[in-house]
Length: 123
Image 1: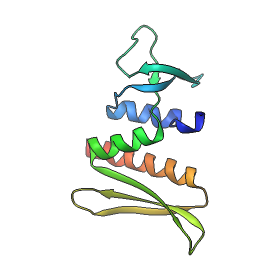
Image 2: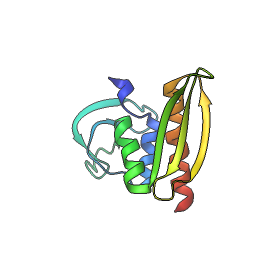
Image 3: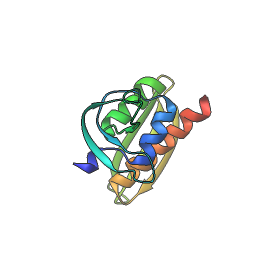
């Protein structure tokens, strides 16, 4: 089940970007950075015991699309036997970037980080 949640680094970057949706997990701040299951947690809750909301991967990707107009797509390319990602702006349909990895999960993580960096640059 742990693989369904974004990494601590991505959760922290999303929080800095303004992510504040209810999540089923949270991370303790460093140095522990341990994922703990929750029934409901967002980044505004529990000021006395602050944690970082840990969204599911799909929740993070949906947030980037809905709030920041960036679409993250992971696809398998048979011709090179690699997974690739594409970051696109939905309204303008401009291709931003495309890279390839041997592992789907690595491609998803890198693409999500790149999308977050693009959002931070816009701010």
